[in-house]
Length: 114
Image (cartoon, rainbow, N blue to C red; front, side, top):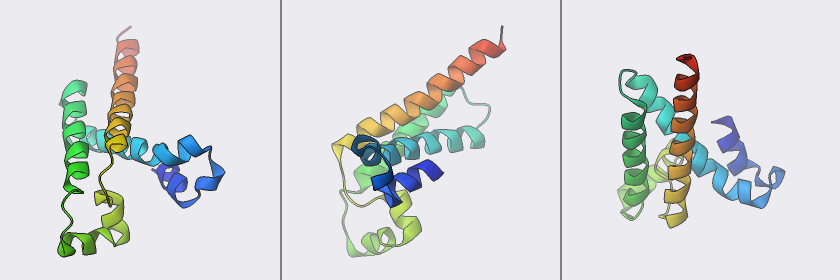
């Protein structure tokens, strides 16, 4: 989470590609980890699916630009959770972030069974 926030607050500290996409990728990874924490009995793939649905829903909600929700978006917490505007590239970042989390978890599970 700290890396994602740093990439947004201090983008000049990172290569341009990382600064542009790290925040969204790490946001989705955090969603995967949070859902996994809340639903520990769910399979890795189920948690990944829910995290992707959640992330995609938040991104699609950015197409809705009414004053009341934009007021929420312009608060620090509202902006971090809801974002500001729809970008197709964010969907790719979310897929990569959740995919990384799921892959690491599956590798760890595989190695712990040995």
